Amino acid sequence: MAAPLGRDTLPEHWSYGVCRDGRVFFINDKTRGTTWLHPRTGEPVNSGHMIRSDLPRGWEEGFTEEGASYFIK
Figure 1 (tube, rainbow, N blue to C red):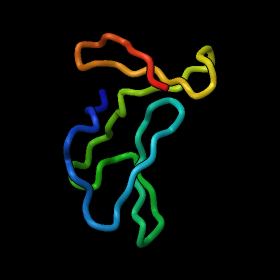
Figure 2 (spheres, rainbow, N blue to C red):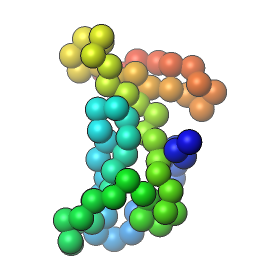
Figure 3 (cartoon, rainbow, N blue to C red):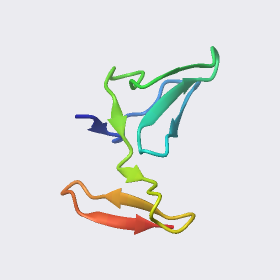
Figure 4 (cartoon, helix red, strand yellow):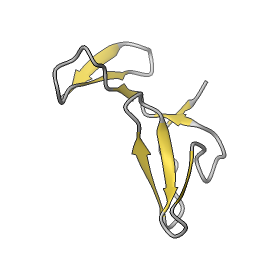
């Protein structure tokens, strides 16, 4: 199971993006390489957000740490 994104800071020259399914990927801005693993922890992370096809455009579903869903616009 993927860990939550949490408060781990990214190393210098790293950024991240989130896929439509909520998976987080990391971008090394110097090499332009990408990875599914957090560059500091070596673990995959989950944003806790998911874009669903049954929601109106611009809406996402998020989940609390307890697993309750909520919606974000």
